[in-house]
Length: 226
Image (tube, rainbow, N blue to C red):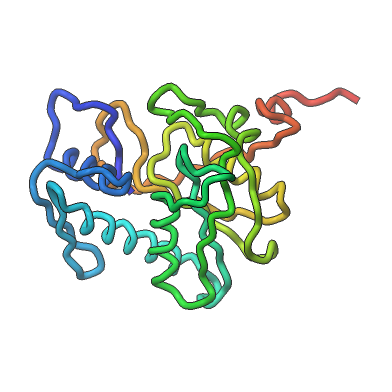
């Protein structure tokens, strides 16, 4: 939905601060800055220092509108799966941020759309921002998937910030390995190291499927000669 500047640039624009505030709020942090108001679908969402709820409601509404527009038929079944945070382990049943976001989205639909925490880490992970692993081949072995809904139901992933895409690739790989399919992923922020002209532009990116039998993707480059 928004660019997530990793550091302030020389000429920070008001829209840069706004997009950064939204990303911070989705991550569960104080959005800081000044009070902001954004309109989506005829509704105004307010958020600012110490008040992240409006930004979370805004992103939830954005995600819901995309999912509704993509569902065919509209009453099709769908499971929303959160990418677990670093402390969401198999032995820890505590709630975590992206699971809360997934449930908030599912609650806007009928019984046909549900949210389940089907993914957990096998051990506490170092955050990517603190030097932890980012690549799918490093993350995949540390993830465990337990399907909690029928494997024939399509799934989408939810995460807060995307950097390399490795967490999404590893998560989708484990879900496929468990026998289900992943149709898409929605994230709030896309890490950027430089300004883009419109920090609210919605890029659509296609990530390569992670194959545990070809973890570095060489199969897509080299072909055996028969």
